[in-house]
Image 1 (tube, rainbow, N blue to C red):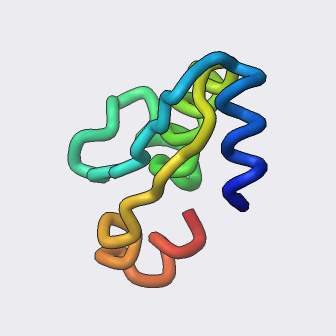
Image 2 (cartoon, rainbow, N blue to C red):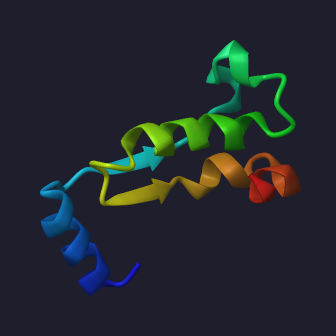
Length: 74
């Protein structure tokens, strides 16, 4: 996202909310564990719940890199 896109989102949503998607697989709620990609499904739920107020999402890449290829696919 470019700076001007972020500024537009801030004014459009009247929000500065940035949500960190620091997904620790060992802490994902049980209802997501049967999904083919529990981390993706959990994050999707967070994004869906916050999309109206959130202006940006930040992945903590280390959480994904630690899972190898599966983490990058998530």
